[in-house]
Image (cartoon, rainbow, N blue to C red; front, side):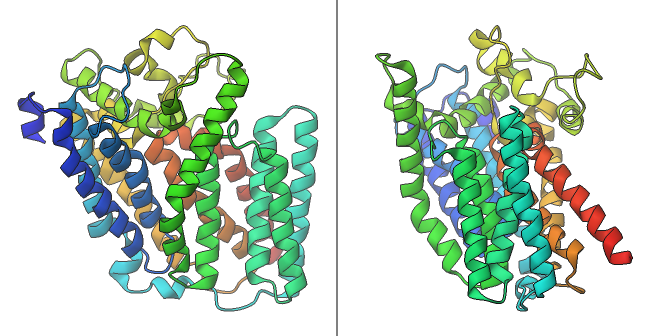
Amino acid sequence: MAFAVNQPFFHGEDLYLPSLILCVFSFLAFLMCGGKLVNASSVASYGNLIFIGFPAVFGSLGLYESNKSYTVNSLAIVLFLAFLFQCGILLFADYSNKQGNASRGVHTTIFSKDLISYLQRISWGMLLLFIASQAIGAGIAANGFAWVSMLGGTVVSCWAKDLTTRVSGIILVLIAFVAETGLNLGSFGRLNLAVLAFSILVLFSLRMNSWLLKVGTAVFSGPILGYLINQRVEYLQTQRGSGLVDESEGIGSVVGPFHSAGAIIDAVQQERISLSWGESIFNAAVTGVPRSFWPEKPVGFGREIVEVTQPWLVSVEGYSDAATFIGEAVWNFGVWLAPLYLIGFLWLIRVLDKKVCQLNAGEVDKAALVNLMLTAMLVGTSLNIIWGSFSTAAARTMFPFAVLLMLWVGARRTNKQ
């Protein structure tokens, strides 16, 4: 990293080999971490591959250009920090492999009929609340209810005893998915789809205890990403009518955050901005506080960085950008102290990995069911942090997290009675 900081003579093609190495390293870590389980370490490794490694390779081949003020050296620093993060996952965060107990987290028992009935009532009730929320225009609440409904349906389809009940769980997931997205995947947030998909994969991996899910993810990631990119381009063409839509716009949300991280590093090195020293993380923690109660509430990281990454859009009200977790690390602590942020993130991943491995411990009751869904959702949302920031994760999963937390508290009280 010192070489990249002090020797500003890299060329774009010089990043190809280190970018490719990071891709291979992250891909292998995705397969290795957690073993047959999809845990937080494997999801974070996948995010590192898709949002750091892939954009770096894509850009080094000259396939994507942006007008953000990054340099090749600043992108090299992003790559180095991402590589350091990946090493940390393998050496420290991946609890399941180090403890040799990944298989212990697999639920091998069928849940009782009473528990499944309880979860069915909750899940269908959430679907009705989703419909009601949509009717009154409460979009954030509606999305949260839909997420909980789909997670509940997934648990039913995995752990119900009879085939009919399992099929009903699958039907519930499909209904909630269609109701939320309208099958218009060009306008619906593709990152939200990825987070939801990995949350569901966590649940299936706990039940199946098979390499099939990870292998399938590796095989189909490319075609699915290509399809979603085409959907996005078609949606933009529809919105703009005769307006020109560049093919690269479909992949901009995947590649763009990597370049934004480079722009932040360049701004920090040139001392054009002051370090935040953890303010963006505090801002993420207070995301749920209504601005009506706190008019001076600080904006999230995505909005804050626009003045650096896309200053020509500062005047657009509500516009925000993403700069990956590396961008947030440097924004807060600078290039040399960015590992402090990475250590904190790695600790969070380790906590989630440990939670996944312990999901099978103790008696399965109503609280355990909700805990299962809550843990899966938190593991999936690590992609939000990798792509954007802690503010991104807080804003996008705040409501489903609150719903599941309330359900868990209620279930705990019911169990005690």
